[in-house]
Image (cartoon, rainbow, N blue to C red; front, top):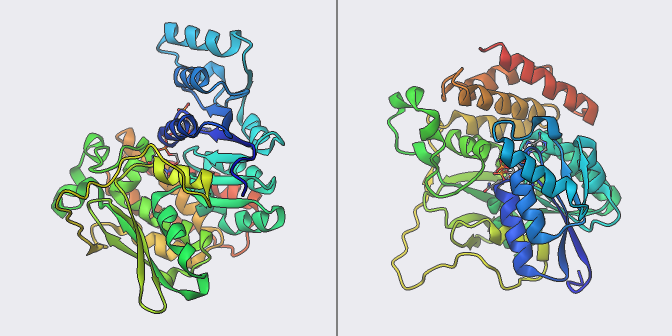
Length: 396
Ligand code: NDP
């Protein structure tokens, strides 16, 4: 890629944790990178601040204004005015506008940073339109990996991982071919409950589950890290993204979150990527690949003693991870069902309707109930997403 060429970037989910970090990276990079479009679901105030900083051409509010900041009338009116009243940017509303932005001929790169399967339609649109897709929205790969890959093969889209683990693997794989890989080793921090006595897990609170020891992230992925469903989703994501059978994917607990993942090649060499936990690095790499440019990220301190631990996963503590391996092997409709069950179960946990430990149990039950199909269409996957969410509601 010629990095001096125009790089018009659409940041889908700009108001989230990854979205805001992407905006920081874009400000740091400057020309030829430009945020041409930003999207929010409901957070108008943050969208308005980002628009001031980055002067995009287009804003999308996917949740629609009736939902917005109802409890903060002043904030709503000032943010509304700043966004819609100024005439400085084109503002569009609704989920369709996300797809239109992701498909726009003015957009070269799409950063897919919406949380959950809500991000799938716009991510798929970006892939179908041959964009460079910086993929944070792992759920779209979990739900529809083969469909995404087929669309990329047809359109020539490049899907570059933003997840720090997959970015680490992608970086290590620059040293060898896919057929030279013995296995990939995803690292997992272990989250807040790595050392918690097992008999206390049924009683953990939402607040405890939201307290991640090493990463600052959105709420859903923080809960996923506590259950280790995040690693399960990453196993499935890696299975499709690197076209690697589940048997060649391994997970190790690494509490320091410095080694972001590793690739073991056939000759026995293991290549790892290390850096402090800071998502700006993988985001920037996905934007500038194959170039490495100066970055605003945290640096390793080589003057201090460095302790790096790696330990096997305790599957009794983290039953969700087993589901990830099973679904990565099964493919077909299993990813959509696991993902939707998990999203809905997290909502129930966050609203106090089920216990933390029930999240994995609910997902297991609904996966077992579903009628598996090996080559579903995207429409069938969307139907199953809705079905699984309805099934989860029966647990309340
Ligand atoms: P956040 O919850 O912080 O942000 C989510 C973003 O998606 C916000 O912009 C939000 O808008 C928007 N959004 C929420 N619901 C919808 C919807 N129904 N339709 C359209 N947009 C919506 O999430 P994160 O940034 O933490 O995560 C984003 C993705 O990146 C996830 O897939 C996650 O797994 C992945 N990821 C995140 C990492 C991290 O460090 N945070 C690391 C690796 C991957 P609004 O703010 O207006 O509600």
